[in-house]
Length: 144
Image 1 (tube, helix red, strand yellow):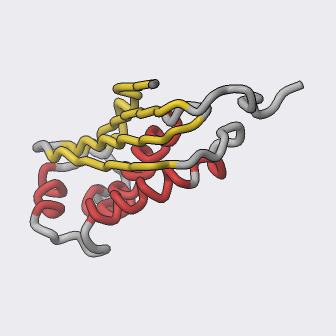
Image 2 (cartoon, rainbow, N blue to C red):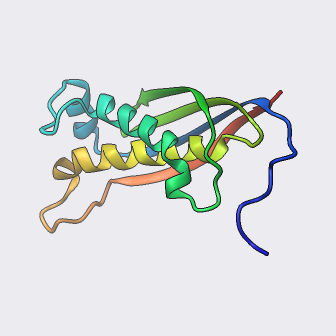
């Protein structure tokens, strides 16, 4: 039988997962973000809220993920000349890990940044020549 894994006999364990990813953007878009000149608002604050919401909604987004009691979410951004790196840390004490939650948070933050800056990124034909989401990985996992 397929479906969610039975975790009922597993003990609760303190768990932490960190995931990161990157969005490549034009340097001029990075400057607009830094200067607070994005039409839709504060890009990084909205992306942070989106990441937190994504962490909490992971079981609704990924079919076989167990709902778990998220205890902490941290979202950090590193702005570079042509990219923004996002790192999401998730903590919970439960029977299963939190890496899918961290990955979901990173992905949603990156998609939110893309959405909020797409008007600056499109060329005259509506193409995204410089915009890329890359390097989404679990960077650290701690159990116990």
